View 1 (spheres, helix red, strand yellow):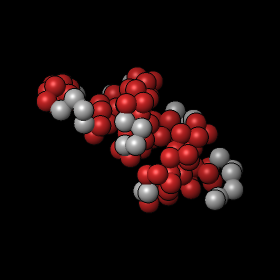
View 2 (cartoon, rainbow, N blue to C red):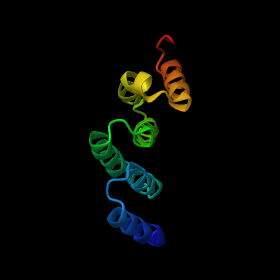
View 3 (cartoon, rainbow, N blue to C red):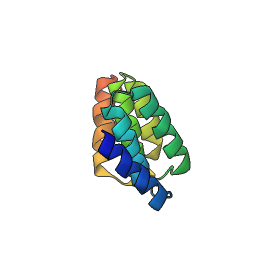
View 4 (tube, one colour):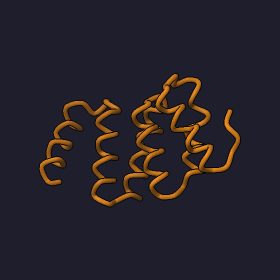
Length: 104
């Protein structure tokens, strides 16, 4: 992970306003097993880029791996119409089934 961290640090300096770089930071923390930190970083990124599909997806993935499916769905559901993403809609549908909620 050392090389990845160095490249990520460089990317964050070069393009600090790129939400995809924040998503990579979330994924790196997640892969390192630092899931609570990954979630905190995802929430920060989502506050900064609320319309980023990549950031939203990263946040919901971390939440589901923390067995917080209801929170993931609550984060995802209100943003689906504005995101217009088939992948996120499918993910929301799976979460609804796992949470025992009726599909829309």
